[in-house]
Length: 77
Length: 77
Image (cartoon, rainbow over all chains, first blue to last red; front, side, top):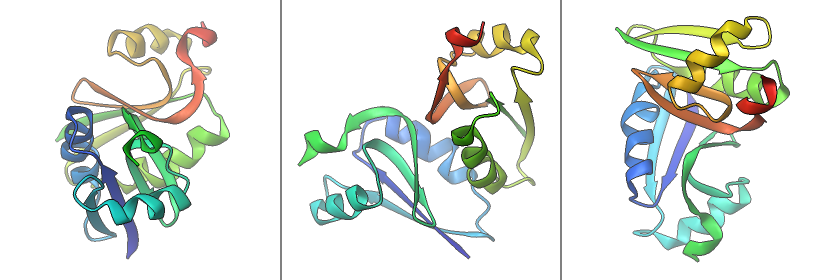
């Protein structure tokens, strides 16, 4: 299983990306975790370390994929 | 089946998005088409009409999801 972590901030752009792209991933191949960084601020540093600059973002096996633009991660700190 | 069209320009950022995110989609639910707009420039207008501003981008059921940043669509015309 590949590890996929979706970081979001509860925004509309985030919700659309989650519903369509993240929920579209093949769950037989991906273990998906959804993280709202505003609800768990301790995960912001982790996202940043993975190279996440803005949200929503999907980190797959350590590689960040920014999907559209909701908010700058730096603005949420 | 949901229709997913991945527009790219053959760039490295595009290749990473294709290999990881697009190939991660559940093919039992998504009919995926991959389009290199530099090889088929007639598709640029179609991408633009769907709201694509930059590549790589994935359009799912008419909704554009820009994945990281490779090139501005307008610069490829």
